[in-house]
Image (tube, rainbow over the protein chains, first blue to last red):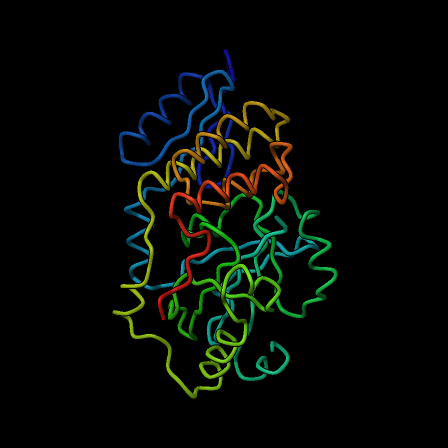
Length: 94
Length: 197
């Protein structure tokens, strides 16, 4: 890698690229309708998921799958509970 | 409630939308849950399900289908005087659904009640995502700029406006929160949006 590093966070994963390559990826994502948050001073961009994509999945009523850790770092996946009724509760300490 | 229903092909999954596992730890350790109790520091769940405040609950059936979209329900009546919501109302409906005494909402009704994200919501989530990453790089001031931008884009999203307060050195229960809430409510906006069911 030459020149300044530029971090692109895509799908929750951060990848370090050359500045030009990173900015190009962010631009391409934006042009394809994805939300992009970019900070040129910080040399980083976050590529999100479009409202249309999220809305399509939600209105299909198929519960979007996810994998998240518990306090001990053990990963749990929603779809592993297929066959059970699930009460999903989002809460926070704030 | 969970102990009563868990033998009936049912589980609770709780997800703490917090900046770190340590923020959620005291809550989880006090509750000693026997169901999955997960931590979501990057708003994975909020992004997938368009969660804009807590508590938010959903019902998902055995086939992995959403049968009750984002709703507000509490496990206790601690906040009843603020919310007007009785914990027992949701618990009774949940118990009847789990026991198979009632069916959940029809699909058309679920869709009608769903709140889908807008482009501004998703742009706000991208700004949040960048801010959260910057915060964890120690770039606290840069992070705060993106959190502020996210809050402007999605003023109804309290997972952002309130949830990022601990990353901006603000007490999420303190005067700045009360001021934000006061202005929001005064403008005619609800802080909690329970389903009209």
